[in-house]
Image 1 (cartoon, helix red, strand yellow):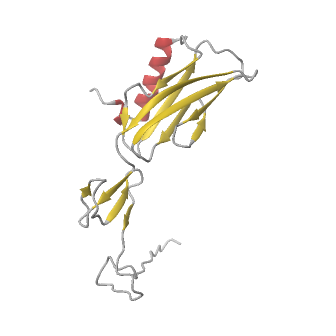
Image 2: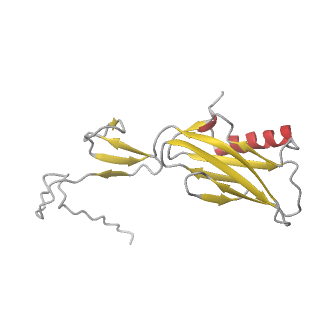
Image 3: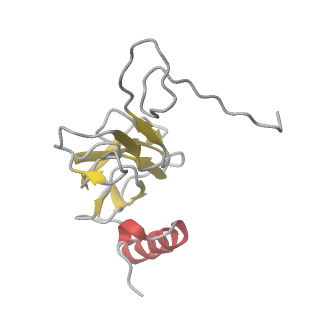
Length: 174
């Protein structure tokens, strides 16, 4: 069964990475991004696997550093990253050897939706442009935040949306 790259699991991505590494060795460039594949699209909140290989770049101690184009970075030849917002980002990997020589490769990543979505009062999805919404859901964690109203310093427990209501959780194991 063919699955889009964006929905495949970690084992399949690692297998794909191994196939790409073997099929293209050595790379024609000093360093090359092999995952994600060019033109791939991802949803906000989804983990994206990045992998790079060195081709003509030489050294006995080579390190890789990623700049994901959203103000965050990571170290390693294979890393994962989650984009929160919708947009086009340029991910860049820079490799450095023991002589402090460097080489880089970049790839544009399309994030087709936001990590956070608006929900109506009944919990259904509403467009990002909607002016009337009651909750926000984090697609990565599944958590939902509700917008409270009627903040008048009087709790109204008959109205679950009242801004003055307070709730606590009891865990019998603690």
